[in-house]
Image (cartoon, rainbow, N blue to C red):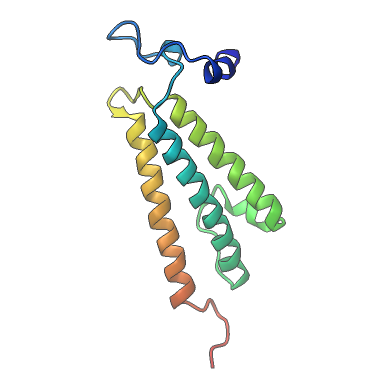
Length: 139
């Protein structure tokens, strides 16, 4: 954790020293586009939380089994948990972005896939708001 905090101020290594060096401490500088992707994911996550709360108030049900138990509390608790889980995952993906998951998939590609997934999810939720009534009387 110390290296993470100090590395944000005094960047020393932008590239690994050796070609095959792939561990987390090999660098302490990360590409700026990953910050942009991370921020976009967090903004879309806020939008998803707001749309989810709106849809739930109209009678929809939560389809995500991880988030489903959390929607039964207050909207603030739900949003807090959602943002904590999302931001923790985004930070982890950015820290590991130069590595490969399962020895094959670049973690940076997973970061971009999460961003694309949130874009699709927001589009779907907007479509739901526009086209479905969730049992509300429409007369």
